[in-house]
Image (cartoon, rainbow, N blue to C red; front, side, top):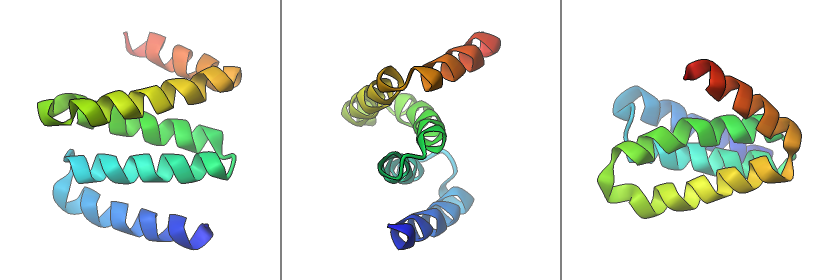
Amino acid sequence: VSRAIRHSKKALAIREEYQKEEVPVANSFIQLAQISEEQNKLRAAEAYYARALPIYRADPQTFDTWHRANEEHNKLLSQHPQLYGRWLQKNLRLN
């Protein structure tokens, strides 16, 4: 698993450099979120979901992907109240 996360992080770095706010970058964020969640690195998983969702939301062709990723993110938050509290505080400050 650690090899997979290293590979995903390398791929993400390359994508971020050349593709910035495009869907492949969001796909990498989701992959890292899922791996982080499997490793019980919940804050990292939540952060990756939070970075991916706006990219999907901005592209009308990725509505299904956004919806699925948003459901995964909400499930993570609902299963771990401490993450939900941090997420809520962060989002209240932004609004």
